[in-house]
Length: 241
Image (cartoon, rainbow, N blue to C red; front, side, top):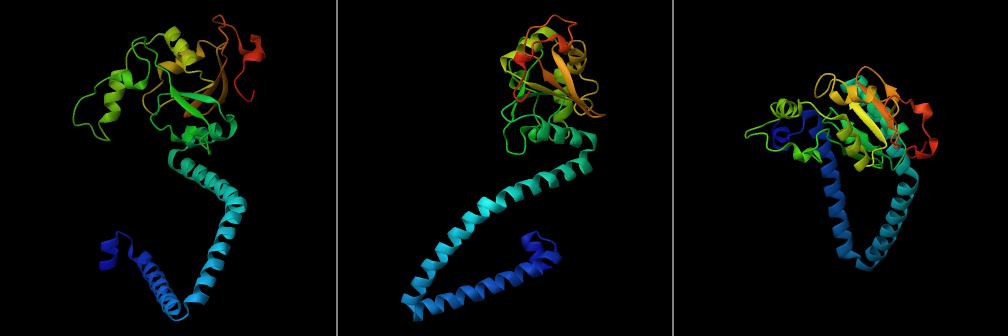
């Protein structure tokens, strides 16, 4: 119990750790004693051991690392879905279906890590819908003493004001956004960006939607409002399309 308290691990985890530490100590002591008595032989063994470890490490990195990354991707998707439900499913779609090197804009969410992709090959950006802001940092000072429970309503209060659809569209172009991820209910309910995207189907082509989020592919041309995605030239589509 004392070891658990001192190390901040559960008691069931401490015994195996202590046993492993004891074994490692015995092996290290035996190695030191052998080195003292047989220095030349131990130096040769050390060189071979280091060489073998280097080869084994290379083989693991070349063969095993890809499998480990795939397992990590599968495990995180399960964890996201269990914890966040349909929002986790939307993150999974963005991770696997949006092509590498694409730029993904987001709205109405403060959890953006999953949007970067399994290998971090998505560029994730925010495009304000107000002329006086060019990034999320432009929201300004929110007050003192904010914590994890008060910062969300403070940010929402600062951003809960009318925006301009054309300003937002220009900002999406400025950051060269290829896709748009909108959380429907996470930061606020029924965000303004969702309504703006629905009103401009020529600019925003819906590629995924569930109860928690919607994802659009952005057509970078300057279509007239009311045009459909099918009327746009395919030559200006985002990467991978």
